[in-house]
Length: 391
View (cartoon, one colour):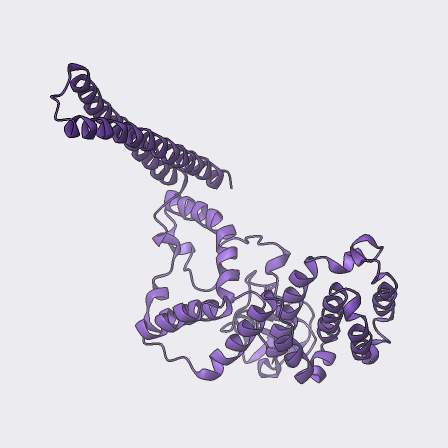
């Protein structure tokens, strides 16, 4: 992070210089324009009177030409100084970051099949961010044929989120009511939150919306057993409606943060219901890569220094463990206690009859004469009786 901060400081200097240069340039040119306009009027007056140019006017013209030349030279000098500052940003980037990342990127990423997976991850990220036009353009340029069923959930969710950002609750309410049963199975309070926010909007309309708010309160009945206290608070706020909620104990109901919260709640629950991740796989991978990259670069340097390039094959697992934080924990992993290696799809964990678990590679190495003796207990067994475990 210190390296990023160093580059950011240089960039801030450039932006500050750009701002000062723009203000100085605009001010200088405006002053020069006023000066030239005044001189032009004097010359026009002299031309109308058909009088020859006086020595004073000739001197003023010479001074004007010199002033124009000096202004242009000063602006050019300041512009050159900005270019120098920009070059320092480039040098800061080169100084603080290693541009050669090829050594830690497996070549198979750019093979046709792997490349398609990468392009599909980018397309999914663009759809999830609502950048539909860019996603469609990438599909065409990469000749990637994306099925309409793949696009449909993203199109629907983005249209509803766009409406929520405009404080339009109708699309989200319709969606929540249609998926009421599935949301209930997820213990989601989305539908109640949407009805609550609609009720609050009616309260914000003042005393003229009191009857409509009372009528709308019937939507809270199915949620009374789960959200009794919140419903009581909303009904209690009606007492202060004529006096104004902004000056009442219920003014927190009018906080704009409720709209941000409903967008987050809708995104989380809708993604859970549709089997989508809240964050796109690309953004998660990128964030994990930013954490892991410095460590990987250090590993690469150590491997090259000790001339042991065969240690890291890029494929199955890293030579050391990299801590990415709890945010990046999605499922359990199993490391074989015999080979001290993390299991993979090609080398899965196998549960023996005795209950102990080892990797398939360890199992194959322990087979002797068609029999397997558990390394943790004396039980002999048939290797074929081992069962694959899925975490």
